[in-house]
Amino acid sequence: MIVKENIENFKKRYEEDYSGLKQTLGVDNFAFEFRKLDNGDNGIIDDFSVEKKIPGSVDVISKDFPVRVINERAEISELILNIKVWR
Image (cartoon, rainbow, N blue to C red; front, side, top):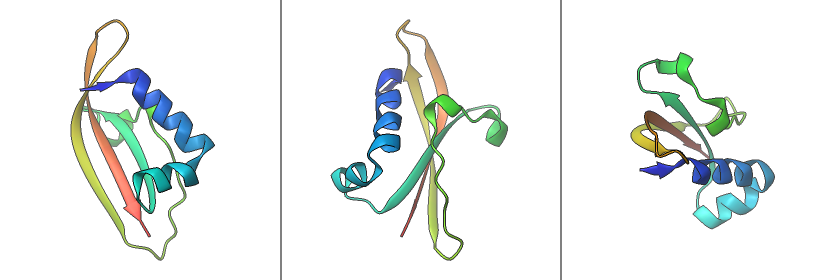
């Protein structure tokens, strides 16, 4: 279960301090997106997702995780979290 506010804070930190966040997490380059469970690629939730230009000459590892997100009204959404990492 992921709290919606935590996703928003993480996205904000990604956009404002990408280098520091990478160092804190101990990872190379990465991006993530949340999408609706039943809508595939067309269901990307922009408020929760980030975009990063991935160079064409790198190997990208991508993994999907089913997650539940709870908002401030205790409503739960079932989503897919996709994380991409590359060097």
